[in-house]
Image (cartoon, rainbow, N blue to C red):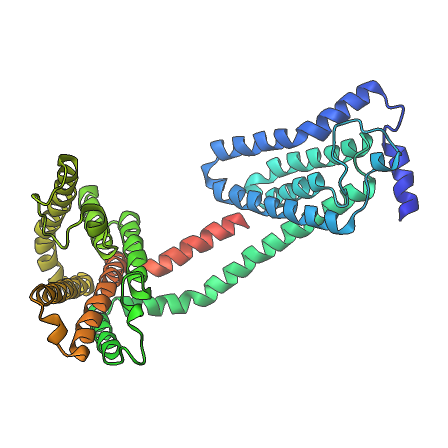
Length: 419
């Protein structure tokens, strides 16, 4: 291999006495062709919105090809022609290993993946032509042997082939998952799911409380514990889902108000009302030495949250009653009712513990009962964002009875276009 590799290099490379015009063209191709390819891809992104997902996938695979190529080159450690004195360094280049060529790996990966999509075949052929020209140019200027660019082209073909195989494999997995998606839709459409879920959280809370502190440590429920951190994460997820899956017949103001309430509950769970404003629950003591800016911030935060809560209460009452009259909206209505029960119960337990502590009665309450109250409060607070997410999913299923299957079909169609 080394003999014909050197023979091909002597035939293609400019060597020590290159033609000035050919060297200029080769230098431009060796250093500037990647920018031209990038410009063509950006133009396709701008002019053809339907292919943006495919091009994004191509770019991701190209980045992986670049990483794999560099790792292989480091592991193999093959020198470049100018490092062996076979040719001058006609373009500025670092003295690092050159087999396989990273330029060739990336450009051929992009070309083959674009060609595999009939919508981008013309662009892929143009990139393929530039990849071949660039491969010649980088040999001519003395930074690669022919075997380097050939190995890069082979690596590009393998990366593109592996990506296509992964796409088709994902297609088959989604097809197999369709029956499970149908069963999941049917499960979410069950009218009592929210109530049963709340009951499950209550049973778990009782079990945790009865097993504390011997079997289960109190740290699970205390500030910074697993339950509190999970609750915070779920509140944020629920708020994001509200914006992504706005409930039917709701305006953006309704969705915004619901997000504010969810984020306010998350802030309360994180004790930001104590950390930032030094007050507990909704008790504001204006005469406790606060400055005017602090008082203004407290009033602004509480006022915004209060307005959002009142707006939701006004909207939800009528919507909830009408939802009960329609079979497809009943699961979500029952889940909203379960959310209200959980919120009132958790809030009442929190206030009860605060009242007992303020009255110096809490130390006289049996330890088992104290742990039960703490466990019930924290676990039901964890149930709140879970019920909110469940209600949003049930609204989507009520709007589109085959919502999960529609999403799966949409993914299948997009994947088919990518293929």
